[in-house]
Image 1 (cartoon, rainbow, N blue to C red):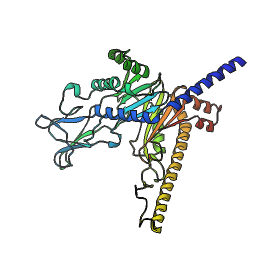
Image 2 (spheres, rainbow, N blue to C red):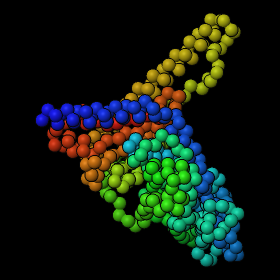
Image 3 (cartoon, one colour):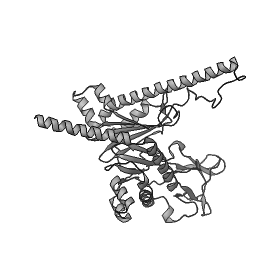
Image 4 (cartoon, rainbow, N blue to C red):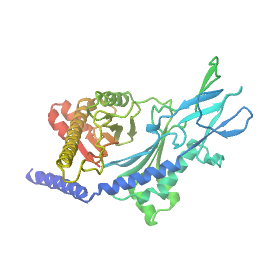
Length: 404
């Protein structure tokens, strides 16, 4: 029995030391740089141009136009219209690609005609061929090209981790075509045709083998894990409910805390064999204005009492802003741990060895607080809490927090 205990202790120490070694060698700035570069590449690969048939039957680009005349109009949500990437220790990197990426289309307008209007999306404005039309096949092909040509340049991933691309997201509000005349007497609505949610995943080992030439491009493509989910496919209710809980908990309040940017700032993806990953886009927003004096250090004549007093007030304002934001950030972390422990236990579709992961992307005040924070909790911890084997405090302490 003593020998067994020693063996277990040695094993635990080995795991601890290996994780500490990785943490010491891990360069978060490099990882952030790699993710940002890959986000920009994916944004370019999936940028679209919208086309429609006009009354004359010819194809013309959709234009951003004012609400006048016989037009159809539909708005995009800009806040969720960019690629976002997150590194999850133990799993790897997940890139979420929205259905429609465009830097110059904030609305759709099209001349009304008697026939059913037909909107088609292409990747390239000047080449409207089948290879460039947005479809299930072309989406998968573009993801494959990204994984072959660009993903192998990402460093620091360990064997057993992945790079996963999720195209589209559940319950994303795609634009609708609204057709009417100027008097508003007649109107109709046509839904833009969607491709399913598509997930393509590559293992780190395969990416390294492709990079060093020991694995061919064709064999690499064969090893990719590809799955898709049609919009009609039933969602897991417990995952949806957890998303609503987080949305309710961090929606915009009285302006004295970090909160969701808007109602569409939360999304999630189910990771086969690993768990579920929620992403919350947050900011501090109004209520605490950033210090705006910039490089100005003082007011009044140099070396005067007025200048010294101004400089003192400026420094005090900076220190107060920094202290307030740091306090509110710590509150955010404490609240998130509580929500994961108190409500994560309702995720019955997760297995004991799977994880509940929440990533908060903070868009402002990055000179004081991290731009990204990952919270990770294993389902087995919550099961131990339910059985009374550990305390609520111990469960919250088991939440792994990684800041970038």
